[in-house]
Length: 494
Image (cartoon, rainbow, N blue to C red; front, side, top):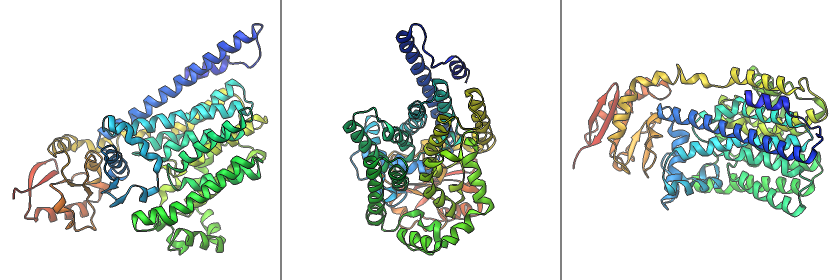
């Protein structure tokens, strides 16, 4: 923070007697400082997720799913996740994730996912800075906005929560906003790059099509940018319909998995839920004025309350559909700053604050106090404290788990719990232990069963012990390793 603060304090937009030379030198210094902070953030984020994985806190859902898919793609195999039981595109239609098969082809490692995630999350500071300068903010305030982005709790928290492909979309979504307003670029080049970036964002997760379509509506109606607005609106709408009505049901055999979180709306399909919501808007009002929803809205706006102005809230029009989706969900994880569900809201909150500052509005307009507020919010809401004691509590079986994992042969089929699964995903067949499964179909394809009864997933001791006793009674299995409540079953020789 000292580097950025000192840089911000000395930065000035006023020309010096040696104008051109000063500007060129200042630009070099600015680029160096911003890049240094992006690099530092990348290292911190990568270390945070890598250490969590080494502590065996990563899970099969969702890290193991994407690790297995990237591994299969890199080996020229069909990306059919054994965790899910269907093709990768049947999950979230995330075709942009296919690019990660390239580094996996060089060397298959889950740390590629951590690296890509850290780079993408940290890199968002660059288009944030560009948006601030584009709006006319000083070098100092632009740097402060980059710091506000890097210190936002959701950036750190999402990084800690396994891997999700929408993190790849975050810096590109910010870049889309910059491109939409980049009048100084040649029109053809701007439209071309906007289209390429749009295709990439849509391919990171099907649900991003909602944000993209809403962004197109905002660009058309409020920004008066017909081409990019129309392209975003049509592209987002078309991909939403294509993904939810054809690709996902066709490859998974069912509607989108998240549909079950909206049973109160009485719909049995994505379009049915949307229809029922339109016909019953009172249901939304009931949900908005609940303690959980108001707390969620407070968490969303708290990091930016210092800079939002009622006259410059137009970019937040884009966030309304996603906020509504999160409020209506039965899954409370969609209403916090810990999980990935609110990540696409961040660019538009940043833009609303940038527009406010550009018009001389906002409670805080000095870079020092802006950064201080961002740091205080980070200290209050970032989940760095989970490493101790929450994560450390599982270390009592860490050595036993490492020894058991070392005994599992590469490529062999495995049935295991959520904690161990992320360590064993480089194989075609891996099945998660679930209390409602008989495993009759999975056992013939599996040579190992690895289970931890001391630290069961979700602290469900009853279900875990019941499954453990069930495997003990299987005649084809024998316990080949046991220590500290960690058991490895191996298939008996024929």
